[in-house]
Length: 309
Length: 271
Ligand SMILES: [Mg+2]
Image 1 (cartoon, rainbow over the protein chains, first blue to last red):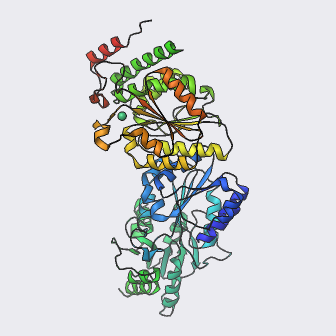
Image 2 (cartoon, protein in one colour):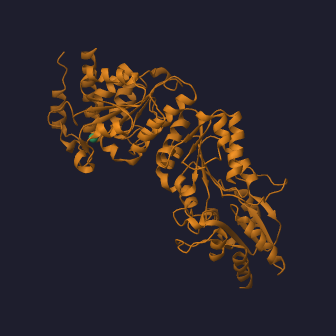
Image 3 (tube, rainbow over the protein chains, first blue to last red):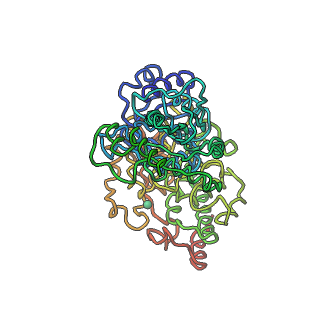
C-alpha cells in the first residue's frame, strides 16, 4: 500500500500544486519522483512529529494541502495533542497517513505496533478515520480526501497487500462493500486483514457455514445505512475483524452505534481483535496474527465455536 | 512616535487590569510583560489591514503564549479588527472572549488557538513555509514566553526553521524570568537562553522589551538576516504597576477593588 500511496500522491501533486508532502524522516527513495518535480513541496521534517503535525496545520491555514507521512504510532499517538488542536480543532485541510498500521511492523516490537490509534483518533471530533483494505481503495480515498475540507487520517498497511475489490465495488469514503455473499454470519472487517476473513469464509463453506464478508472502508464516518440494512437479514452473528486492540476500535464503534440507536436486541456481535495487552514474543505479521487468533484459522475457530453453541 | 506608543500601552494596561477585575480573568502579569511588544507590533511592524484581516498576503502573528490573549484582545480592539464594544462580553458565559485565543473565525485577527504551550511556534513555522512554497509576500511572527521554551516542540521547530533557512520568521521571547509557579531559571535551567537559540542556528538579539526604540531597532534588524531571527526581550512580569512588578502571584491573581484603584492611579496619563 505504501508504494501505491507514493505513486498516487505524486500523480495528484502534479495537478494539485497545493499538495505538500511532510515526511518524518522515512520513505527513503519512495518519493524520489515527487522530489524531482516538486523539490520545494517535499519537506523532511526530521524525527520531530509534534512539530511536523503543528506545522502542517499552519500550512493548511495558509492555503496548502499538507500530507503527513510516517509510521502509525509516530503520526498518531506520538503527536496526539497536535492532532486534536492543530488539525481537528482548527479544521485544517491536512491528511495524515499512518503507514505500517496494526501489526505490519510486528517484529519491530510494541514501539511500532499500532493497536490503539483507532480508539484514540476516533474520540477526536471533526477528523475522518479511513481504513482502506487494498491499494485500490486507498487510491480512491486519497483522491477524495484531498477534495474535502478538514483533516483526514488514513490508516494503511505496509506492502504486498492483495487486491480485494472488483469493479462492482464503490470505494468512496464512508462506504461499506460486500466482497463475499453469505447468509449465516456477517464479517465486518477493516484493513488488509480482510483477506484472512475471506480465507476463513472459504474454509467454513466446507462446513456448511455460509459467511458474508464486508469491508467498512472507514470507521468515521461509519456506513450506518449499510449497517441498518443488514439488521433485518437475521445473521446469526456479526463479527468485527480488525488489526487493532479490542478497546475502542471498529467493534466498539459498531456496539456504540447499536446502543445509541436501540438496536442492541437486533444483533449479536463478536469482536475479533487484539486483547488489551502488549506483545512481547515477536515474530512476523503472519506469526503474530496466528498467535493472537487473528489469522484465517483463528477466525474460523471463533466462528465455529459461536455456531456450535 | 515614542510618546504615542507609551500612551497607547498605558491605556491598554489599564484596560487589561479593568477587564481582569470585571471578568475575573487571570494572567495580568503575563499580559503586562508583553503589552509593549504587542503595541509596537500592531502599530508599527505588522502589515495587516484590520479591514482585510483574512488577506492572503497579510503578515501572520501568532501569540504562541496564548495566555497573553487578554492583552492581544485589547490590542485588536484598539486597532479596530472588531468593534470595541464586543469586549463587553469578555469572560461572560457563552462569549468567545475568554482566557485564550479561539481558533480563527471567531475573533478577527486571531490566527491560531494557542492555549496549549508549544503549538504556536510550530504552526508559525508552517505558515512561513507556506509563504515560501506559494510565493506569497508576508512575514511570520511568533511570540513565546520563557516558560514555553520548556516545551520540546519549541526546539523541534527551532531546528527545522534553521534547516529551512526561514529568514522571514521572527520569534519574540517575552523573557520575564518567571513561569507559572517559579523562576524559569530554577524550573528548567533556561539560561543561557540566547546561546541556546544561537546554537540552534538563529540570529539573536537581546533587548529591553519595554523600550520602544530598542524594540524598533530589533525588528528592523531581524528583516536583514538570512536566517530566522529570535528577539529575546527582557521584560518585567506585571510591568507598569509597582506592586505587581516581578511578583509572580499576579500570574493567577485577580485584583480586588482597592488593588484595581491603586493600579489605575499608577497608570494615569500624565500628558
Ligand atoms: Mg514568563
